[in-house]
Length: 538
Image 1: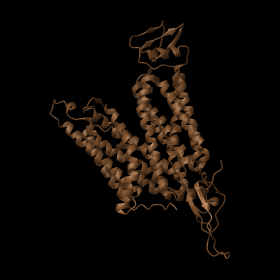
Image 2 (image 1 turned 30 degrees about the horizontal axis):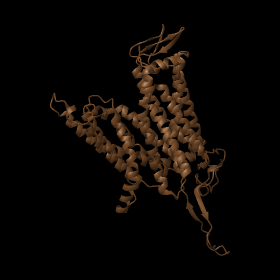
Image 3 (image 1 turned 120 degrees about the horizontal axis):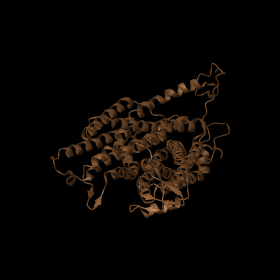
Image 4 (image 1 turned 180 degrees about the vertical axis):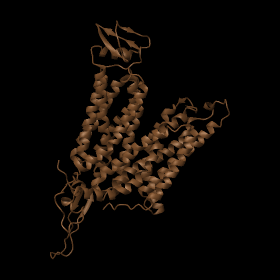
């Protein structure tokens, strides 16, 4: 479908009742009434929920898939599995760079997402096919053979008559009997699985990096407030999918096995693709601005502005001018690498802290590794509270518009306070008398205040970062700048892994170190960016 202009896509134009005189005195003014693009936003956000469910849900069970299934017959399966998960995460995060370049310079946002969606679908199909050949069970759980057709199970090929051990579940028996006639090389299975995961990771990484830009592009420049809030609703939908994926996929894996989990992801990915394609005729599709190298042409003396003379500029001149515009983003995004490194500690050190606490809330047992899911749940409430209550109230009472950098600083301060609370809690835990059972005294519910603060920090930083990258980037570099935002998260993941390797630190030392580090980075962030000049959207 051909691209339509801003006025055509969601604006009504009304002719004025009277015009100026025929002498040309005065210009005719058109009344423009922008309409909310309900259809386009609906299709984009609902497909976002499905993509987020698929990407985060797969990640939730991926380490067990590697260690208990794909690499089970290899030595050091646990180490290989952990490394493979990190490669998967790093791959889809680093794909943000190519996603931004493809969307802004070659294919355009919509076509980039179309190809990426096809890639994720092909990837999960390959993964499902390879997993369909085998059953995942603990070594020695089940032994089966029929008419010399042996079953490859848990890294070994068993032979003999049907001989079900006592700890073999009925589900294991049914699955093995269903697979008894299949025979495929374990090496081929591993190759197909790795290719499928690579395709899925690359496709998901490209979609994740640029979809928020496509949502915001559906609004005109006059719809400033709606455009700003589109990032909040985009992130809200991402968290819906992530929450369901993180909590539901492990249950599926444990109840019915990996194959059903992968088929569920395949169904969700396919449904998201159908929704995305169905709304295609409603989307405003911005054309990419391809670089045109005119190295053989020299601009005339009155053509000195490379931005105004794109046909006769050289590629190097254009990039040099653009780099000057991109430099301010370095001062904003670089300090936030530390924020993301500390933010991800809730999935490691906070869980370790929880193991030292009473995990029973009355009759309810709350395992420590479930507490990070509380963060995802809280984010769903914090986003609308901030957008529709807190921000409007503060702007009305203070009379000052709350800028993106204000929100980023508030988020970083909230993260520092959350780790200060976790440090104080850990200080109390380690000061308990020797021999005293702390599990009977301190409830894991005492982690809730720090989780609430880190949830506020996530919304203030993550949502605002997407909004900032879009609104302050040059229009033809919005996908690229947004991809840089995701790269800061990827670097934060790497820094998080590095911080975990510092020797000799107790949990108490780590929490206070993170508090001081976050406070220091916040101060540097303010010092570097306090004179930041915002781009006029018009």
